[in-house]
Image: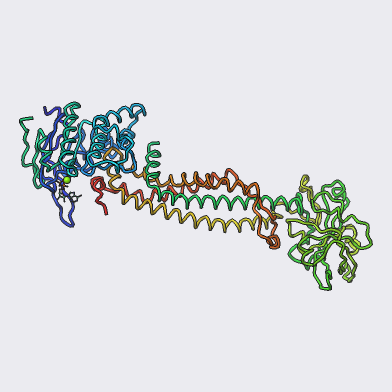
Length: 233
Length: 390
Ligand SMILES: Nc1ncnc2c1ncn2[C@@H]1O[C@H](COP(=O)(O)OP(=O)(O)O)[C@@H](O)[C@H]1O
Ligand SMILES: [Mg+2]
């Protein structure tokens, strides 16, 4: 089991400078994530969820300790290596969708693939496939401004999934959505998780999301205060 | 390639601002190309006219001759040697004798440069054949500007008074037999042309000349004792300097327009980097390095110049083409400024001019786009994603 861990976080500490003093956002975190998990980091606002997700996503580095993702320690990565890690192995889903407004739905989903060497034919196949997964084939030419919040989040799921990443990091993906849309996208992600065995890690304090999790890691004030497997799933 | 594609999408997405920047920049493009084209056309035409009308393949000046010092004109003439006469007979040279005189049109005294030239000469397009008239008075021709100044018409008589080689004053009637039109004002303003043998006779300077014009084919025919050869570079100095002076005016205009568009592009870049933090963060999250994002924004800014060049070509090319064909008509009176200038200038646009301007604008825009974009590499991706940077 440990051998197949995609993410290993050991003794991770993250501090931010706050004026003359330092603020410790993450305090000695130890966690492992295996392939195929549908896990959530749960905790109140300000508990350090986003900070942890960012480090796992190689967008930030630990102050102390280590985060090893896909066998690579994020602290030691060159900018190029870190970018490659994100492009090939990690998908991001944000609370605010972060779609590019001037691009169409199709172009938004295509963007991660443009950073790789890939033929146009293959690219098109993958983009259409992931838009199919999220049920947006009829919105290919629309721009984000013409879509509802739920549709936007589905585009960003498609954008995360188009490169078939091992890991998807979703930071409060439902925070801007109503209940119906929240369930809709959660079911979608659960389905992708089961079918493609993609590891999903959520940062959330939304009860609707928590109900779907198969593993719930509780964070409070930068410390892991609980890590439980939810049995009935 | 990717960056170009993404940059183009972003730029076209920004619509109004992009268009404004591009329009100003395309103006700068056209102004410089148009201005340089006019000056090139002017330069070429002025050189051609001066060569054809006045200087041929260069001139031999008598060693004392100084066109800027009228007081030495009396000493700056010399005997034409036999060898030189041979060259003249072969059509390689034609002599011109220059002296000072006064004319009295309508009773007013005017100092003129009285120039003798061979009516049969074929070296210059100056229409000297008109002087080949068998009349009692000395046949004379003048340019249009002089004709206007002195209110002289063809057929008019006018008294000319001069001091001969011995310093004795003498006077005679001349008749205006022809009025010619030239772009070369130095052949016109204050100049009266008469047959050289008659000037030699009244000045008592048989077989003498002040300058020897060589033909365009022969150019310099070797050294002639007592005479100094003046080549095109020397004789066209004034035109060259005038064009250089005029270029400065055009350059100032260009610099002002360029500064304006560069300021606008710089401003657009600063603003878009501030407003598009989330987008920058998203690009990084999707797998771009920060350097790649810097490059993306730089290319996006630099692309203004490419699009501006295209825009300038779309509306400017027909304008420039029309002007190259129809020429640019100078305001009336321009030819009285004493410059060699035609009434209509045909601008000359070269490939080098267009390519050079495009390259210059492209490089400048790239630098101006790059400077604010560097900030991206100092952003924290985590802050950028949330659009938190102030
Ligand atoms: N770049 C930063 N600089 C300073 N403090 C930060 C920074 N990012 C996060 N923090 C602080 O770290 C703590 C945890 O933040 P965050 O990980 O965003 O919490 P959560 O996502 O659980 O709401 C908060 O107190 C926050 O203010
Ligand atoms: Mg958060």
